[in-house]
Image 1: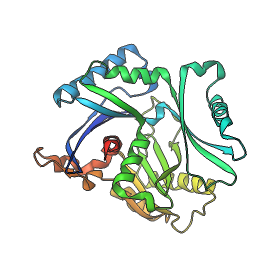
Image 2: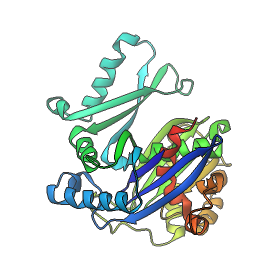
Image 3: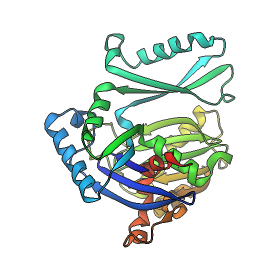
Length: 318
């Protein structure tokens, strides 16, 4: 299966086939883009053609074809955890979810949006049911689909990058036994956190050193220590929100991936005593690499940057 990721500053793919029941990486590539992949640029007619040209060039150069699972930057969607009273009957859940959507999207604009939701594991909230809610703008999804229209690739599924990386971590790093872990996508200008309990989604959030702007690239951290301090502050805030004491390593593992992940940052985070273990996701270390591909091992030294598309490709796992 081909996993393809459209990220804010790049696109990338990983091609994984199964041999004797084991996933094998056949090829992968990453290309930086000078156009940010944002809702604004996606809906700009001239920029859309530039995006499509880049994708078509990659498809032709790497001879890509067949079904693909596509992950897109989670910043193009709205993610919420919704809590609903246990006394609400099942027949009224949909109505309650729609009410929650209307807190995000004005009622008169509902026809322009699509929302999906799923039930989350119970037991963490007294007298409440928990749901994961994701809201998309239909126009964005259609624009993404058109980028691949009339190409040799057929989109099977579109998901958000943080959920793709979460799936990969679940499949390759065995987090289902961990009571609480965090997965952090570290970009140049933003951090995306996903918290998981026993291998199930628990919460997510996005944080930036300054005010967010989808076009802004100046929000960079001055050093690994500066980034670690920002992460420490945000994680502690979330732990207090979960009513978990932030002292004494309450997190079993803090997984890091993305362009700002490095050993220096991991060392600073170890000193914070938030997690028992700090791990940089290197999914290629858990996968077999096709020896017929030249220099595949050398190119995979920073495989954590491919975490999202690897997670997408692994959705076809038997």
